Image (cartoon, rainbow, N blue to C red; front, side):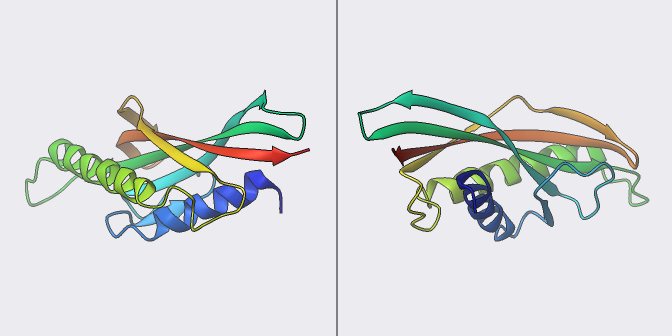
Length: 144
């Protein structure tokens, strides 16, 4: 398995264990179900010459979190609820990634950085959702 897929699998495993997230996808699904949900996608790599035998690589991934804004017959403020849900999920993801900086002792991972990106709103086939994103940078050494 390539490093890209192997690292992504570790991220998916960690995020799937978070109880505040209902569904985790390893791709961006057009019409998701099971809110709040997370999409984990590969963003790219950065590669730097480290020594004559090693290259330092940084693999980047995006975790997009969505909390559905829908109708509620109990008069709950759905925008406020979605905001609180995203805040909880963002905190839980950061805590999870910070507590496992080697992705379960993955030999390809030196350490992991996680940072919150710009929150927003997403329109999808089922309506609107509050969104939050976390950018994960996975530092690795590639032996030449």
